[in-house]
Image 1 (tube, rainbow, N blue to C red):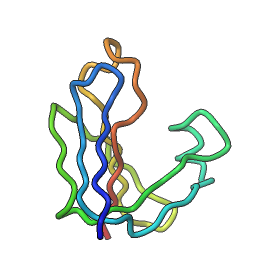
Image 2: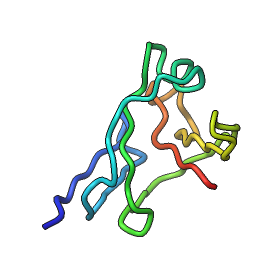
Image 3: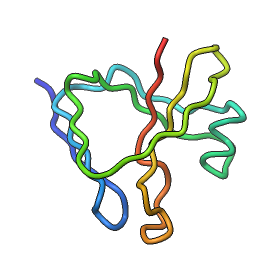
Length: 93
């Protein structure tokens, strides 16, 4: 049975909800994730897109992942108000 979990940014204007088990969990040590997290790694969780619901205004910055795929990092549109890290990332192949 899938575990439902929810979360969001510090101010609560961006929220997420997932109704499926994670496909994978781990830590990424690539330079892009180090820059995004400000540390040696960034914790990641892979979720089925159909089971993920995001509410709130999210803007995406697209870059190229080490794999060559497009990596989109989602941010709340007014990060200065929230002081939150990226809301989510998505990769397209």
